Image (cartoon, rainbow, N blue to C red; front, side, top):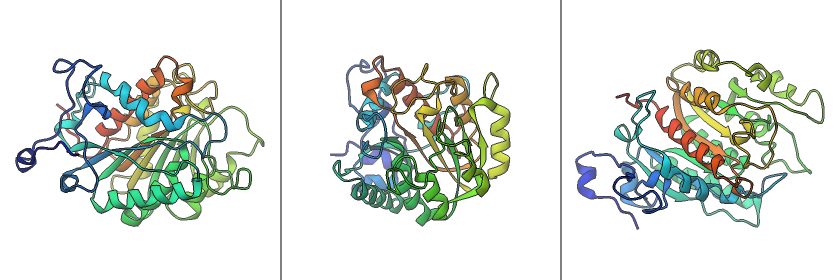
Length: 330
């Protein structure tokens, strides 16, 4: 059931998160930021600018599972996020009609079928002209999302934050899983490698050339070592210049791009990663691009005993909302 008010739509008012002074944070709806929920099939969905989507998939992961619980956990921790950015003055809920549009009903026993289900689900989101902000789920989900967005927007620019390049040709003989998706995306023409930036790759590999395929395609690769002990604001200025203001741009953020000291709840943690402030700099640096969608993936609550990984993820999703074109600053 949708809980939208028809009169509110007619007056072009925007949905607001339920405030902590109106309802204790441990009460109220279980939606992202305690926003109204909306079924994708409803008439009200036609009025949305941005839809927050959960994709509870973890059968494409190669190490620790548990990301199937990511959307629910991140929604739970999102009660601590307030509606205005104190430093940026960004006001996404005064700028866009946003709702939580629920989860994609994946097939938890079949990865290939799940990939097709996710693509079809996002085809429906594109048909409503909704910009998706997705909570995963393992990183496999980005491939069918990109396939759906490509049908509407054509070849996209891509900003990819991750400890890993995810450009393997296969893993255990499989072409589509969380470690192969960006090779498929480039091969299929979904993204323009010359307008693709990967940030945060690090640690060890099976070959010293594990990141080279992307570089050979023209991808700008910024390993974590180049990010240590420095602000990433200048880097993001370069990224905006590379991408340009008009190119449809997708942002995909694997939480393992952040150091496990800040985000331990993930399936393939790697030491010496990005910091939480650097993560904010990256996402805030996307403002000024033609952002058409974003995802936050690989949060694994069973390894997040404090809830801090999910809390950080919820805050990063808020920052993503602030980075869409047209988000006003108060």
